[in-house]
Image (cartoon, rainbow, N blue to C red; front, top):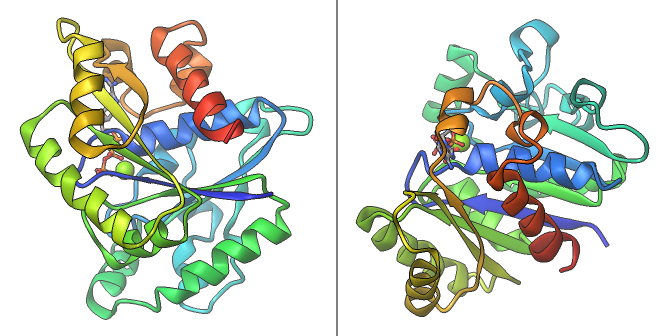
Length: 253
Ligand SMILES: Nc1ncnc2c1ncn2[C@@H]1O[C@H](COP(=O)(O)OP(=O)(O)OP(=O)(O)O)[C@@H](O)[C@H]1O
Ligand SMILES: [Mg+2]
């Protein structure tokens, strides 16, 4: 059974795009077929991690939303580029980084229900095991839709009071939307902060299980979203926790 996984945070810069891209690759390396849709139409970014430049190569999610293309034609097979071989596949559906395209989305809006039908079509045509949705932070129409239709919602937060307060809003909305399953990921945790106390605080506050905790990492900051961390640092603690989240929270679910 294919599954839709939405990755969301109330506030920006928590690490959604990096986590989504690395989780998708970790899962594809297990021989599974995955796609990532960048629904952050206002401020797209995840393409950077895959070195995709759609202004050179052509299509983006925007072309599908404006009826200029089928959704499958906006999907890039980035597997060979990532050295994902065998049965595993990674497809990326980027959002346009073109100024006029972003302005059009912001000023005119679009029919959000097209996203839902587009996701279903992608799952069928690309024979996906998992479809990941990378979202815009906060509660936009597309993030509400993504939360509502997901089989699994991954909420990311940093150990920061602003994130803690905002995350309560996301959790309440997700409960109202009757999301199938929700897990938390805590990212950018400073080295001196106690992990089990933090996990307990988050689980008690939201009554949602913590699937993984990632330390603030100099190496991730250094990479600066210019590649897939898990491929460049296969033995790093981040990659080890990433594999646990991929296996326990996603593949075993
Ligand atoms: N554990 C970490 N340690 C250090 N830096 C990190 C870590 N995780 C992510 N980053 C860095 O944080 C920045 C933001 O990451 P990312 O773009 O993935 O966040 P985001 O939640 O998708 O942001 P936005 O809300 O703008 O879409 C990037 O520079 C990334 O390299
Ligand atoms: Mg992002």
